[in-house]
Image (cartoon, rainbow over the protein chains, first blue to last red):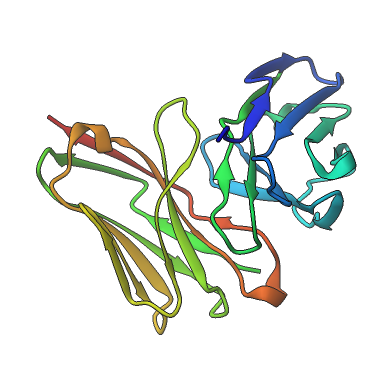
Length: 113
Length: 114
């Protein structure tokens, strides 16, 4: 079984540019989560999809972040325009059921210069 | 919302010694507590978890204990090996009506010296 995959693995962009991160969850997992780890701090929740619906987006920092999961399969997270403080590692995770094990992707390291 | 504190932030042990990492949580309604291990450049991987109806769980050299009254849980690694070196994260998952996200501790960098 393929694990959670994320693309790209690294992205370096200038302040003001746009970046789109992609996550492919484990096939059949309805629950998809985005998390972020900034500057060696804790991993923080961004949002949660159940299939194509946003279940909880309370962790999204501001309206420069837009997440979608059209069709309930893969998800994208767009940052527009990017700011310096957006730098960090963005993780995606998926789970079969709410409260079951969350499987993490390898993360996308975003550097905004 | 939930708040998880993790200590220590770094831990250095000699190979063969034991390592203990402690976490406290604030929301008494949280009912699932996983531990993730992240090796350098790799994804966080679940190594053990415990639910609130259990006080202790063991899997070979690793064990987790949970004290619901005190709202703290700990990871114990015995007979540490160099390959145990990694960053370890504890997390708490809320009860059904309190959200859907894992709340993580700040991480512990464990270094096992050969």
